[in-house]
Length: 155
Image (cartoon, rainbow, N blue to C red; front, side, top):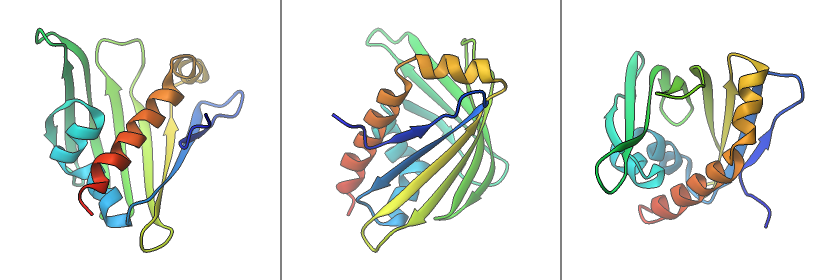
């Protein structure tokens, strides 16, 4: 089955571009990235903090059924322009991956559809390639599928 979320990673570069069209109005797609309750649902994580504003920050944490932390991520939001763009850093704690820079651009395709383009820059080509060896594409597609499903209920 072909993934709806497309990842373009050119050889020898330290960045990649992720694109996905959603059957959601632009406002709902953007809301799915800035409202803690929605983010927690589609990401399947606890949103400890999400300040969707310039110079804001965020913290996510996922625990197993016994309460042990299995994933923790954080970052700084450098720019947040409603229904247009989010520029942020993303760092997974306790992992070999350095912080990355992410540019999220939101675009209206029609009244009922929108597109997300994510440009992610890694510290090195090697780190980007290590990320791509993980089930990164499948995980991103699965998360975007959940985003679509959960946000559909808000229409």
